[in-house]
Amino acid sequence: MFEKNIPMKKIILLFTLFFNFFSFSQENDLEKNDSTRLVIGNKVYKIYHKKGAIDKIEVEEKDTTLKAMKEKNDEERKFKKYGHWGGIDFGFTSLLNSTQTSSFGKQKFLENDPSKSFYISLNLIEHKFPIIGNYVGITTGLGFDWTKIGIKNNLQLNSNVDSLWAIKETEYTYDRNFLRATHVNLPFYFEFNTNANPSKSWCFMFGVIAGMRIGSKFIQTLSDQKNKVNNRVSGDYALSPYKLNASFRIGYKHMGVFTNYSLIPMFDAKRVEKAFPLTFGISWIW
Image (tube, rainbow, N blue to C red; front, side):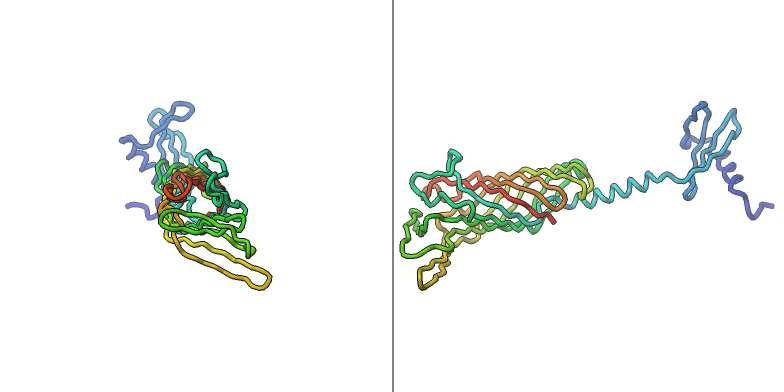
């Protein structure tokens, strides 16, 4: 008859006799003795053999490394789904000519006021394609931006199918005077992270942002001693229908900085001197 309650040590001895016939997790101790490692529940049993007989049995808690590795993998899988494009960008823009200076010979209205030339980008959708774990990947998405070019010296912009020009306004004082362009954007970044955990990682990104103009307006607020007039006139104002920006971003946790430089002129080169927007600012990453 078998005992109803067989001690655990006897169970281990039976397992040992059976598994000694197979290659099962064998290793050598410091004295070069054979050993067998059994995992039962949350216990690890190391059975040492000496000259064909059981020498000793050691019992340890199950290694928690597997749990730690699983948690790390779960964190990495979560991080792979998200890059560092999603969020809000705010910056300032300056127009540069072909020689990378801010002076323009014929069309002085391109010498914009950077302190009144704002850039806002709302980056709504993002997706990251991992290449090397969570450390290297390609990030893309979808967003919108609004670029406001501040016009100096009380100049009134006018355009037709052939050109864009400005005239000096002497009757009114300009409280607001800017050209605004709205784009829908598609980014393409190479992304590098220093840590698999997004709350501990520095992020470096470089790539391009392709955009299509979906609207543009010339906006003014004029005033004299008696009246204040608001003008909002829609039109293309010789703006290019597309844009392509080289972009670099660096961030930590939810904050970052960025810079964009246009690879193609902001305006139609047949109607306006070549002007390339340079934008820099801060990002809030969600």
